[in-house]
Image 1 (cartoon, rainbow, N blue to C red):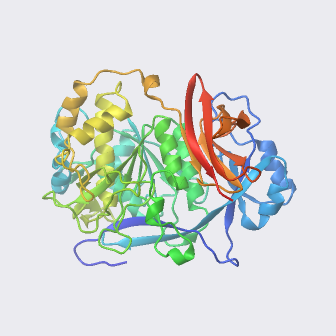
Image 2: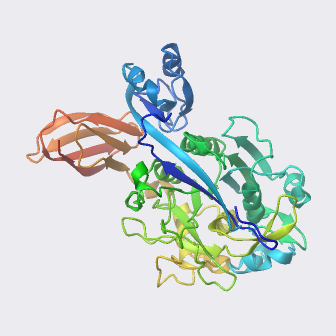
Image 3: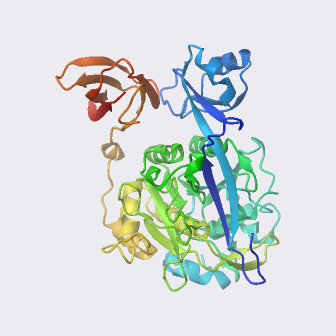
Length: 504
């Protein structure tokens, strides 16, 4: 932690460390075969309580559970016992996390925070009355220190704009005594402190989730993040912003590499993509590694439907620390930039100071999204994304530093006004992701639950068929001979096919 008398820059970076040390205590997912539920929406249905109870009866401690994954989190040492149960399809290591905190630290009167709002034209958009009113914006972070007591947040409480909060680290009520990082993110997103600082969406409703235990090493940070996303979905949030990133810096420890930043490999990105598929707009900070060995964006910023936010200074010049793209599969990332250098933010006592990091540009862009969604509630998330990108100053010449550049709220609004209202069901695509591919003994298949499937060989012969009961399914392939196959899934008269290579 580096501090000086003038400014402090804050970034929370969660680094996924998949430990290869056999003596380390690790955790694992125990994926269940089904949900034993009559709920028609798979993602709303809870994990089968009978299966959870069965784990406990076999002396397997349940550390947590995920209804999206249809899985329970257990100690890795209990994997064999869990796999012996008929209700468990397969177990997989969850990994180990190292959480590092880096400090580089109506009429609205924006005070010292004027430039960070004006750079995206939000001051003019606020004057039109678009402030994100009624839009639910969830923030995932390491804590929201003194948000319950600092005068700078009085307007949010007076107007009942903080509608829900939860601590997923302790699995209890949020205590407002943890990290200042989330407090600063919330301030940038939506406070209204006249003559001092106004957030990007001062009319929005806020849902606050603590998912990170900032100064310590954790085994189940991923579970906290995923459960917070499920919780946010259950209360109908419109936007989720996360100033968190999952990467790995030491490949000898078995961590992620840049090649995993392909939009489909990491669990965090998969979860974020599913949230987007369920109608939640997801924004994420790119990270502060542009001048460090890692250099690149981190998960879930690599997601196709995750709006990844880099950082520029007050003149619109890229910040050296802002993480660079592209994604490992060659897509433009970050998608765009906001001001993230020497921003106005409150310190732990509510006194305004200067701070830098993509953690600070991210909530400004999330606030921009809230304002546009509040003004255009009938437009799809895809349309809002397109309008925002088309409004950027580098839209026609995107690159790996700026993405498409700096967005403009007024221009994006004008673009949205010209777009038709679409039937959102027409925009849905049938999801099919198969990995690992090539595969050996088994393959994971991610698709919409309820789809039927058939696996054919190069001669067109059906070698296997059945139903995909879960979002993440497991197909045994150790009995198949080496070669190329085609996996086809069908759901509601839609079909898609993926090539699968078996290589023992």
